[in-house]
Image (spheres, rainbow, N blue to C red):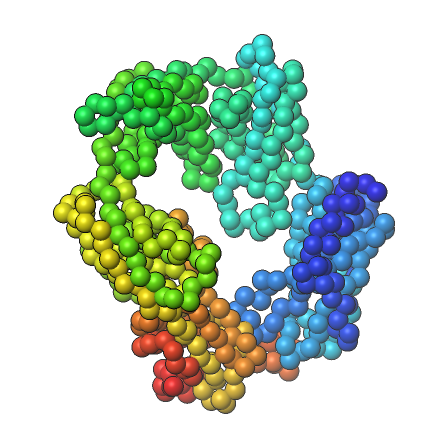
Length: 516
């Protein structure tokens, strides 16, 4: 069995283990043949995934639950659901390690049960050859490619984000299975980057020659405010990008010895693209921007932070392996709930502790006022305001023994009273629910879909007021065009408390926001 066949069958196994190869009875059958776009030859072992898009779904093509693989002649046959009252279109995804992933979408007809898709051409993935020069000893070089961050390119869902190969002793390297998009290239030895190319597109250049630039020596000593050496401080030199979609790279890292000294080799980089971070837990990090290595000060001073200590009283029935989190915010944090992905009032830092140990310690703070929240699964968020400039020795006692609740309800059409299924219900979040690393794309955890009865549920919530943003699709089948007309309906409501099941109505005759 070839490596390609083995990879496809393995991928198909994991796909179908989770969802099964669904050959739905009385469904719509899809048939087609995948061919090479260059030589028009059939392509065996293409992983074909498809799914019917639900009429009422806000995200119609989120899942591809039906899967198969093409045979030796490149043909496939796949059956998907075909209930005209539920589905209106289908999406198909083709994946093969030697070809660029491809997605097709086709509207379905209520009278049609077989779709002949004919010959579908796939473009081959690209190759990149390269050579490295500039040193006599080229053994042990690792060449890495990282795809630029352009999330709009759908094939990123199927394409590997990173590739890494080892150059041979003469400095030659070779990449395969690349896509026609820009990559950031780095060359490293012993985890130190010795060459950096911000953008390479294999569609525009099939070969690249890289001459290793020179490196510069950066050395210094890290001390505290009393000029005592700090051992174990971390130093990171970062090369920043000139274009938004490329990737920053940590060129080198070092750690201070017992005398607070460090030394590292850093790739020669324009000062405006180089930064240096010096940090150690319990101290305030120092970041230097626009670093000119020849002009760096030999002594780096770190200021020791303030430590806040405390003990929490938690609910009694928490699992022994659970954790509680201490999240630190500025003292003037706004606690109003938000549905805006850009309104990220994230914590300054978060520290995690096992529930079996009630004591906590948060260090590295400025001598200022803060707001602390104790959170965790099964733990309602509990707030305490702290003045770190005066409570450096006092141990705080925080009572956080209130369990969490649920927010649940049912979405109904106002004119008929029928349940609205597949509606997307997003709830607002509070700052205490966020993590320091949260981005807009990670907030989908505050979102769910209604079931066939129009019901939804959010669990593990702190008793508070929440906003709900509901998106649903209303569909009407037109006899003249034999197509579904889909209308998106939006609604936003404020829910005063958790623990109660609410009925929420959508539609033109909607005269009330919700009812208990």
